[in-house]
Length: 324
Image (cartoon, rainbow, N blue to C red; front, side, top):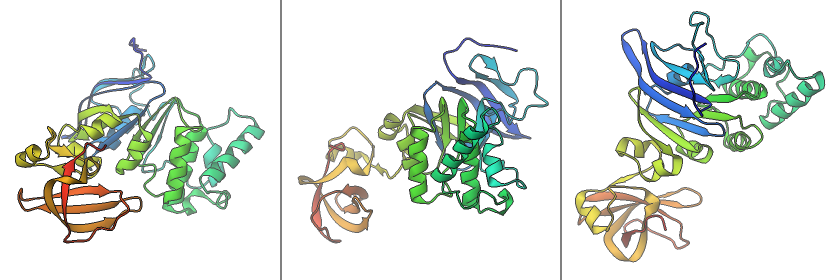
């Protein structure tokens, strides 16, 4: 089996993948180090799910290689490849065995544990993911949200070296999602993880590093905070949350060098540009405020954390604070 000297747990080199004549991944280079949680974001059809399947060895690329530790995971078994023992994926197909019970699905890949160990593991998984009442049900008879939780429990129960998660929180209620994210950051944390999600808050709260994809290519990657605060372009910025795209006059007026500015980087002050409040959206811990500058002909968004009441039509001053 071919090997390569690397300090990465998982490494993709020059991955190209197509479905027939349709190119889906182009020259993907990706590394995942032990202890890392990497998030992948991109518009629909950008290649995120296909990349996870290639990294999990469920799909074989037309060219390029993926190495787990020092071994090429494709070498010598391209025709029979259906995954890798040390890499587990929770995809949107769930990959459950439909005609066995929920309990049997969760522990089906944990045969190395003792009987008492499997029972203990099963109890923990069902408790954490609110599956206690469906353990004896066949997987085929569970809801979409339950299937997603069963698939997550099944993958985590194997204690894989690498855990790949494709939209793992899409069908979870808020409280269950918060619980799952907390556990994935602590006791469920694999040696390394890759997470695909559309909700920016999920990626930013869970991931150390972000990879941004567009049309099958990686357009930006880096530490989560760096990518969020300094997106390469508007496409990257909008994937991760609301953004103000300042015209050149506003860049000068607000005394910033940034054209792409997050709402929390703008604030009300005694001095600044004159704006009128046009819309207020209560968001719980803050109010999202839309304002319009007639002088510069642009609508802007800011987040207001103050206690005083604001009103639509109110005239205020807006300044660039950089989030301070």
